[in-house]
Length: 175
Image (cartoon, rainbow, N blue to C red; front, side, top):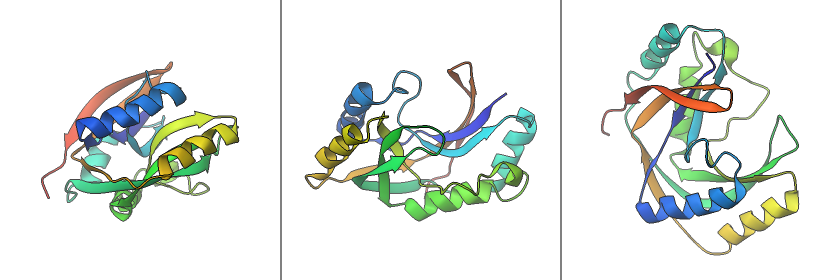
């Protein structure tokens, strides 16, 4: 298995549709996975039961996370020639980072990529043409906006052969 942990945020329907319109036009993952935060990246050499138990142990005291996006940033992908447009939360940023770090703190620590900065985000666009992505970033940022949401659960997913399957959903307690 190729296990990951993602959070599909709860968003207002109009905000979800706004994000999805952009993703449909500019993000190659649109049809594969919905808007999400990746919390844990690819873990291939751990049994699902061990992976699940470790994630649950590390998030035992975690409650739902409120966040708010107010801007989009340009990011160069660390593994390819692609550039991305990321919605990065103003509020909730540190809570998502701390959740990410906590899950990687023990049995998953050998899988933690310390050579790459972790930036909590929803990817809304990607392209090898940086000017295309920069235009998208600028269009989003030309006016003020606030997209509020909540992370109320984490999904353990398996990603194999360009297919994503949710293996387990873990609900987070209310704040």
